[in-house]
Length: 415
Length: 157
Image (cartoon, rainbow over all chains, first blue to last red; front, side, top):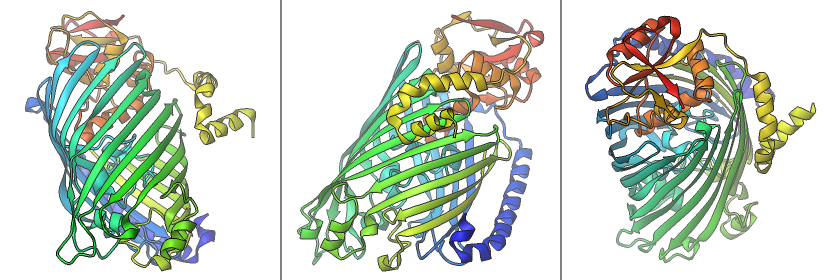
């Protein structure tokens, strides 16, 4: 289907398939080598070490770039995810965990190694049917079903997560935060009710969030303000039916430089996410809905005194053909401003392109578990709208086409 | 398109119908699910574990890696066979009433968010017996023909 939509894809598909096959072959050789390594399982203090490595290739049509120059003739190999984590449980009620990640994904993620999470987890109450504990340090933000493990391809339903809710253009703010989480769970005969959350300092420093939230050419910088995050979930029959309600009250301050055209403004971002999933032996159905409230204050620029609601949702079905093969289909919708779904009001007010304010993405994909440790994936996106395309990878908004296609392949190894 | 397929498409498009369609899906599920022929098996613990009975919700919490101690406060060590082992599939479906892919997804969520750990995977029934028999606080599952005095049988209430 992608062949009929664009000639360059057809022309370069074979060459890139060969390149990917070579990368995969090298990767699987590493896998074979790694499996020969003695990974000891009886380490002191219940030490466990896990990790993953993945490489993707993306090819898009028109001039719409996803993670590097994916619209170029040869596509983009600029999407790589590497992670290594360690956890220790010296006592049953005490765990220490940390994960380092290097993520290369276009201009927004240059591949630097960073601390993804690192915290102490202490369970101070543990009964037959309930437990309550506390976590201190840098924790993943408990948002929706996928945010906690969003960089681990094996835990995602597709190569790209539904971009309406799991934006990759403002990910740092969403991905983790430093602070304190309380957590607890209560087990019934047929279900588990659990919660986690608390006060945190969001990770807002860096150009990615500044450009995404204020636009390019900003002189000053963001600073984190006290924020709150939390999720309540109910799982029936250990995950046959899963429901979650999560939200955050995220506060960011803007520190202007002297002579800045912007004042010392602040941004308050309060998304609420409703999630539901049904898991049968072969089928899984997932849907999430997000209502995202943005409030911009005191920037002393009329165009930045904003107060609007964004809206996102997706419906996704996955079918396990065999334990090795899984097919997925999804319809994913994003409205940057729910009062202006076509983007026309925004276009009239700013002179921008209306398609920057919405995106409707139809995705179909296939996953092949070659071994339990090695997975290959392919997927195709047919998108109407460009709202979730990164400004860093697409500096000239005028070049973008509202109707576009994306094809991607991923190979991923885990241990 | 058959009536069943139309029903499935409807669920996909309108999540509000999901709840009312669960009965139908469960029906399809039971028709589709294969029963693997495995030898009679039991849930086993290290012989030093004093528990002889456990509620199903506790058993799920233990194999879900969310319950870490026996009622006497001693740590629990969970051993499992690979995801595609017939005994693991039978145990997951019959004793825990969940599918192996759900267990794997739950363990992955714990491991890659730092909020928990994965169980230890053993390669064979011999290794399962050796590990459960020699590790204090261990729990696993074994076919009856493989069991010996180093392990106790645990019953689900």
